[in-house]
Length: 383
Image (cartoon, rainbow, N blue to C red; front, top):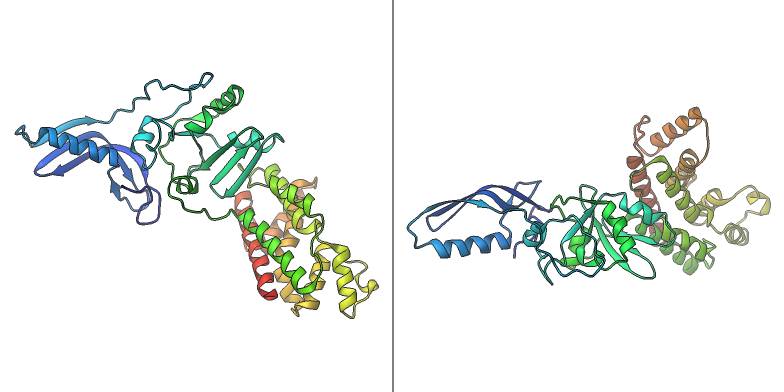
């Protein structure tokens, strides 16, 4: 069976193009032939269904005496009317996806037809407390309530994909909302979603999930080695962690809300009392030395005292947390235009970007990477 993943590592896309197939001195010229084409290296594969239909045609016509055939090829007709549950709305989808994209034809007719939606379909679910949107990987997640769970993926073009079989059984009101965000197929389903569903490949955890996992590892290590809790309010922090998601459109508000929540989980949850007590009991520093220290500065003091790192090393190490605080102020708080620009320029310079960079997605991605690197480095010192 042909694979959707190309040998070069990219995902192939279903396209319809002029194509000439030659076999046993027979040439078939298609006006419109379904092909799986890699956008990176240009490699072309015939979908299994296409290949099987060609073999059937050759078998039926090999004794006709003709050696050249001109065929119209594939038409993009819709499904014949299927027996859908009462109340199912009419979604836009492509029969071609089901027929020609590898693995989608398993199961009952049409079950794994991909239905495409604009990215903002997720926004309603993210901001409605009745729903939980969990992105376990960068392009693979699920929407859940007490009544249902819908897996979804996000393709390289920023379109949300769900399977027809998962959405036709939803409450009618839910379906009408989805239909309002339903868009035409771009025949591109390559994603961690597809790979996880059909090829049994575990998706790489999303970067936010990596941050959360590393935070937990650090917490457990400090308990084991030093005997105190680095963080407090674990249940409250977990509630916030579950609602944090990667921004969809990277508006100032989205990015601000995300940085605000990340700051609560990583900084505001630091166990100030526990850290101070440990430092006082296990170093030459007293209450007066620590009186003005809170949060990040207290954690900085602990790293210097007990990991035997220089002040300069610790300052570079904790840079992401201090920058995070500035970004929280820039995006989530009311400040003057002048102050905002000044802080953003400072932030960009400190994280290695051009001072004039104002691309929220670029700033966000760099910040998450640096937070991950920070935790990995601290954990490395503890080990």
